[in-house]
Image 1 (cartoon, rainbow, N blue to C red):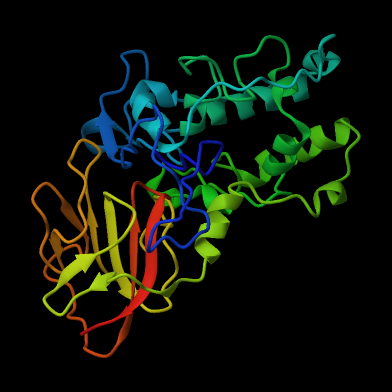
Image 2 (cartoon, helix red, strand yellow):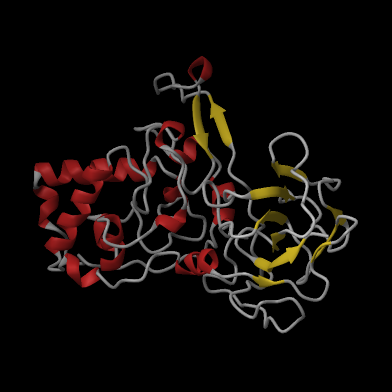
Length: 344
């Protein structure tokens, strides 16, 4: 499960040989293994127009960063159960900023913009956790709250959607591959400027100033830490041996990278998990058997696994005497070994 340990779950002590002593996510506790994003096409509902996909279908990425076509509901065209494996889902209480109601709901222009924002959110994977479709209740804010549901947003959440807090580590699809939705801030939108303007007005309505958030930490800071982590030389036999055998520490793994030295550290899909400089990447699907250290040979895809990079053919050979990076994770964003080695 993505970020188990990174966002509130336990971390392992990281005392074993090969652990880097920092930021190692512990094993998932009653959390599902991440299911990778996939694009699904479905026939439109009978009361809806034809979609933009092949034969009039509606095509949607099953992902937190995904969005269905504008005006449609994400949960109608994608499996929110899959999406919720991509974040640690658990209900969290909402804010209650307008307990006495909000007179702005009587203003035609405001009500129209609020409805537009609501429809935009419903069309995205964010609605899987921020609406009534969340099985155990929403996570903080929800588009289904009675009255002005904007009152369920904390000031920080509002600031993030106004573009005042860095949310880039959430990951994004290009809009041309995401039904026109841009993920500039935490929630994708077909009109990011309009979305930001709405939330900037909400922040102003609450009496908050943009500069109050100048020093606000980024959302997903643990991912920034992982991305910025400086790998050190491997120890305890870790790395790729002269016979191609790959050794790592920390237990079983689902994601295995061999990269050029200096390549960025991988984090989350869809756009931050395959850094430039990746030479070989092997994935184990969510329902597959994890890999064991010493049981994988460089360039040979283990049974039940899949080669994610290169997309076809064998990886480039490792040059003896050259430095490379080994990056191994228990699940997405759960690194267990990340170190540099010298090819033999």
